[in-house]
Amino acid sequence: MQGGESVTVELPSDTELRGTGKFSKTVIIHSSKFITIGSSKQKKNSVDTSLVYSMTKSGQEYYVFIPLAWGYPKEVAVFGLQDSTSVTVELKCAVTFEGKTYEPNEKLTARISTSEVLYLNSNQDCTGTRVVSDKPVGVIAGYDCALKNSKCQHAFEQLLPVEQWGTSFIVPPVESQVSVYILASSPTHVTYQLGSKSEDINLSAGQWKEISMDSSPPIVIFSTQPVQVLYYCNGGKFSDGSSFDPFIMDIEPTEEFYSSYTLEGKEDISNKAFIVAKTKDIKEVQFDDKRPSFKWQQVPGTEYSWTQYTYKKGSGHHILMHPSAPIGVYSMGSIVHPSFSVLTCSHNGQYRTPGKLFWDDSACTKLCECDGSTGLVTCKESSCQAADVCPDNDPNCDCVYQGKLMKCEIPGCPEGGSCVEKGGAWLCSTPEPSCYLLPSGAFKSFDGLEDWVWTEATYSLAVPATQDAFRITAHLDPYSDTVEPTVIFPSDLKVEVKKDLTTVVNGKAVSLPFRTDNGLEIVGSENTVVVQHTSGLNLRYCCHGKVTVTLTAAFRGKMTGLCGNFNGRADDDLQLRDGSVADSIEDFYEDWTI
Image 1 (cartoon, rainbow, N blue to C red):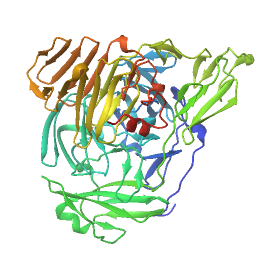
Image 2 (cartoon, rainbow, N blue to C red):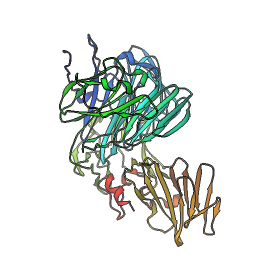
Image 3 (tube, rainbow, N blue to C red):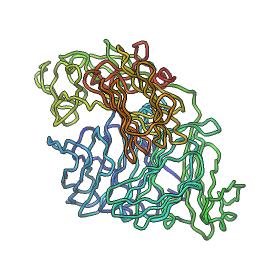
């Protein structure tokens, strides 16, 4: 390779990791001079990239960050750089490894060598999981699929070790809903500033803070001890109409800024650079030996300015640099395409997740898949899934699937139960009967469906389908970080809880506790209001804006709204007012908008 030249190497599909365990599927790259490497994974309607850090940036302690995503596992990969490396994973989520199930707060220890990967996945939230080793390793984390913008999206990022963290950060904004996460490895005091708002927080080891930010201004972060700052964007559109998928990105500390960066433009992509520099240095920032008319904006309360710069479409090698001063540079790509949705599939009376294989019969003779672009299911004759082993073609055999022993059985669980994997077996479990909605728009149904609501509106949250016991609505404004619930009971009794925890009954503010003769009780504390009713309703509203609804078993299978039908199955929660299943998440949101 010559200076300014780039090479793309496409890896065969069998290098992808499937199942949990240890694998020898590492790509090792050596060079005689300094190079930059990026990793990109692409599948239908979704692409994400990550920098690949050199071995000099590897370490022996990491904290995992994975955004909230429903429907598919969260993934963590630890890869060895030296032989006989001992790795201990202090788990925040349940995983199965080598036939043993590890619960949250347990430790998993394994030994890996050069080119070996310890790969784990879980349906639970793994953020805060700690990885420690006796020799340097690398860690990658992400998820394979989450429904964002009505598409099945994936995201991943190679994480920085604790020894590469910093104490000063400036986070430039993107034209979409964004969360910034601050993770601590030791007790630390953090101050962050968002425009005129400033807040101080204390974090202990393994704790993190989520900060929601809109299109402006930047977030400024200072800490007394090194922290990790990650940027998670839910995806969206730029003002020029180009759209972008969800992505995770490491934010570099200002003390780690460099004077020169290489940018690699991509074909058919609108390429954008976000630049942070000291205000006194902005006139000397160069792009390909020229000084474009950057539209700089001051970062409030700092000596820094920032700008967003769009350079021409098409593949190409570019240099963004300052002749003498360090600057920060972040690169993004977006593409214009027609709007489209990932469709769910209704097959034999059941909702099926796009892209996920399933057996059509109890004997495991037909393997089917839902096509998210058409909403149709296609099936093919099969005795076991590809790469599985079924001895003697026995239709009732045990199958080795993704490294685990699976048994073909009649699908389904009793009413109120859901099917979960544990220890290589599929078991029925009873779900936690609660639903929540956050100010960011993140929600979880009674049966475990998780996603984000994007649009400001009032939504029907939980409404019994067959009885007039109550109706719960919530007004969501994700841009001002606000959600306010309302409960309407028979005889026009109306309870509203405001953002400041003021409780209003039939239009008048009331003091707490408050009780009525028809079974309503409202109690409160310094940071929580709880609305309870003898019908079996419990609504909890916290000062940070989280609305949680809990119901008794009497309502199982009898609910409608964003919180779902409460029947123990997340796969049919996209139910509309008329009882049919929505073709997309977007249609589901729209139908339950008031």
